[in-house]
Image (cartoon, rainbow, N blue to C red; front, side, top):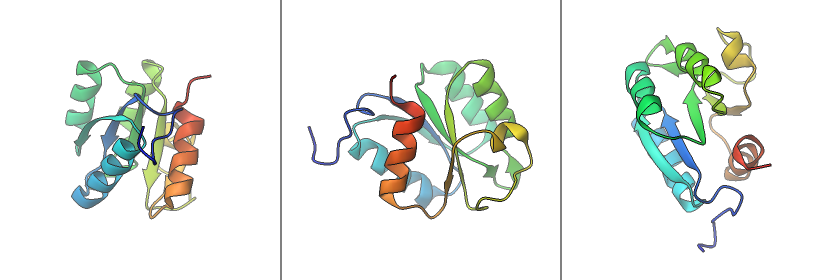
Length: 127
């Protein structure tokens, strides 16, 4: 076990949906450090829906806005499959463009690693 592995998250298959390459790589690195299996990252709605169809996922980290387009269609698909997701956004706490995005746990970019891990444990850890 790595020093940074989080037992409650270890082995979880998490999809990263993020259109900013550096942010996506940072999130993926943190997830791997926590012991998660990272799917992606992907940066478009089409890629995310394909990854959802092709993988057995435990959860998704979902950027609220993908190159100017709302990621709400992905959130709708996740809800229909009962896959938990966390919205990761640079828009702060303000209301987003869709109820399916507003109802999810939210991480505000930039985030502290401690906030990131706590949010993921709450959203994706087994009960």
